[in-house]
Amino acid sequence: MISLAPVRTPRMNSEFDLPALTDGLVGDDLRDGDVLVVSSKFVAISEGRIVSLSSVLPRAEAREVAAKYGFSPQLCELILRESDEVIGGVPGFVLAVKSGLLTPNAGIDKSNIEHGRVVLYPRSPHQSAEFLREALKFRRGTVLGVVISDSRLMPMRRGTVGVALACSGLEGILDLRGKGDLFGNILRVTSQAIADDLSSAAQLLMGESDERTPIVLVRGVSETLLRGSEYESRDFAISSEECVYMRSLGYKAKRRNRQFS
Image (tube, rainbow, N blue to C red; front, top):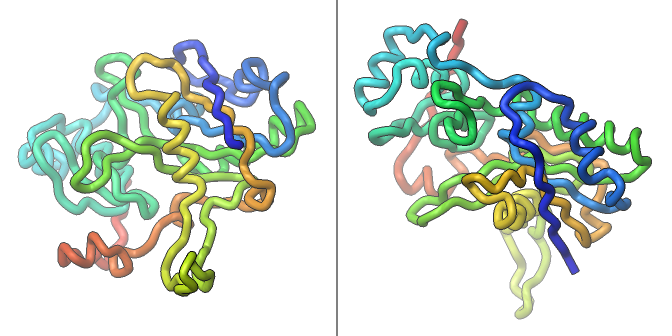
């Protein structure tokens, strides 16, 4: 049986030692086979990925986007810097692709940080996951899985669910193609998003406001999933040509790489 335990933390608003803090809060409780789901924002804050909007100088393109969608040119500048591609938007949001993930505002978040500051995604989520896993293994001798999670909106659905940006020590996707269902039908395209599923389960305890629960300890995950696998954001992604939503909407990816200084 899978169980989830919330790990409450102090409020953090500047760079800190994530492995040391995590070890101090939950290290004594860790067992081999446990999985830690950690908020990407908490990881990003630990890495100092915080920007004061007043320090950002927006270019002309950012001002155009800001005027079109009705929000800060400084925030738009950061979105352009952080995204691989901007697809469109609505008032208050720009829809962007970042490392294969379709996400509003390139994952930049204004919540749970002081007014006038924003938190970016971790610079390299899979390296962050691996570093935390290895640091805890060194400190405690335990073999763990680590998932770096965020919340996301689903098309045509209210509310947020969890999504994995990266994982380490865990099989993040279980390929079910070629297996039979209850009636012997062969699955042709199905894969189970294990890391996303764990992120959504953890989201129940993490919350979205003042819960101060950026870490969830998951116990009882099948041993067959606890491998030395590493998944970065792009490993969870499919191309827009493969995506049933994007193809149905007639979207075609722009064949260019954006370069920002």
